[in-house]
Length: 260
Image (cartoon, rainbow, N blue to C red; front, side):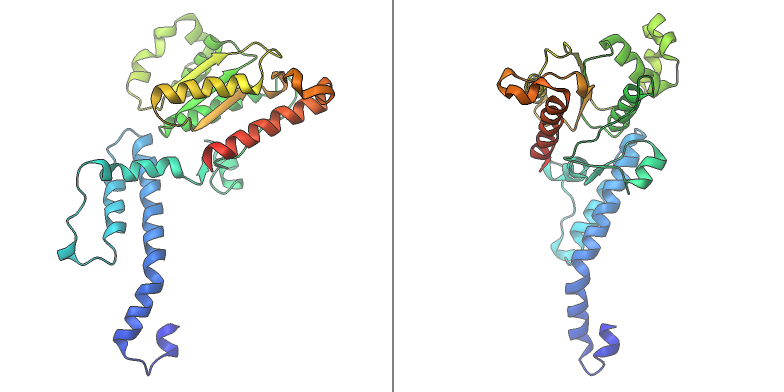
């Protein structure tokens, strides 16, 4: 359209204007392709060759060949990997759900599984955590209901397809399978129901982050209804609606502040 409307303008001027408009859009598109390639390669345990190639391609747009030295191996070469943590959305690993959410759950937000007893809320949480681990993310799973051995067995079953009861009966049955997989770090801790507050859980996450030197990407809490409220909450914390509002609003605010 620009060329058709400005036929009397010298071609060189048109090219400059077109480049000025298209360059940032092309860079953004290629960087998006680099992130998606990094997700695919990291999730399948392959080297991040294509991701690094695309990232270098985006950086080279608008730069003459003589002025570009390429990508130097060092701190700068990790930019493509670091962009994984800056993804706007985190896939949940359920194709239909990720499609409805247009890519997954937005980072920095609160997601809640709601359903009756036995509906699969805890299993859904494990699947969400396992999906993040497959992408190399750091996951902290705090449980106030399912024991740590059961939770770990569910994660291992999710990765390997081996029944949870078989893993509990013989924990080493999936050892070789797991050793071949490239997964992010998982931390699981059991908390006392109702006696544990969200501040206790946040303090635990902070200890993890201090130890590993980076932020936790996904905090899983199983489950929110059993998180207690501090005495300072007053009368609002004495009934279920008030205590629930305090807990879930606290989790939502924490997620936003950690990833803003």
